[in-house]
Image 1 (cartoon, rainbow, N blue to C red):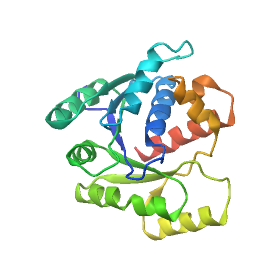
Image 2: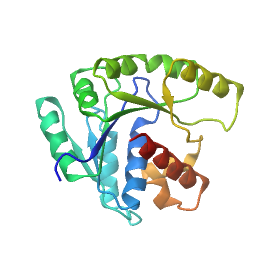
Image 3: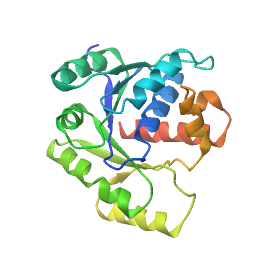
Image 4: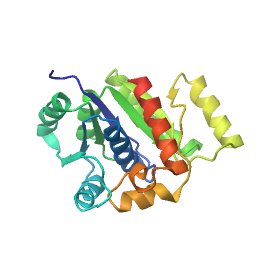
Length: 212
């Protein structure tokens, strides 16, 4: 049935938030659960495209995840095509609010914003939150590289709740496993399926699906 897939725009203006890694990791874990998943790289840095090329040669890659790069006026048509052929489509957006980012957010069912649990990361997300509101799109925040418990994290949780924003219950800790898996073109659930990182990722995928 056409047009049934969920489109998730992974967006954050602050560099180093982990949006590219997050898109790749979630794509793999959802594909392992039997879903058809596509990745769309509209970030000029092209890191997700490089990951996709590495993945083609990765012996441990256990599932198929398509990865394409596109921008400009062709983006809307490509997104509709991907939506109709997949259960999930993740868009890795540019770290700036430009016309491509706006097109991606306009087409998204959910805008997923990764951030470290610190005020500067939330400040950096303001432009994305505002753009999503203008386009009447739902937003979910997710803590990445988060300490298990800290006063700052609790303070950020309270601030996010006070603003009426959605924070996913599951978070990702600061683990080398994510970066190591990404460098090999893999998801952490392939590189280390029984690790704490893999458990976190599965919990995060469940939290995301609950939002959708």
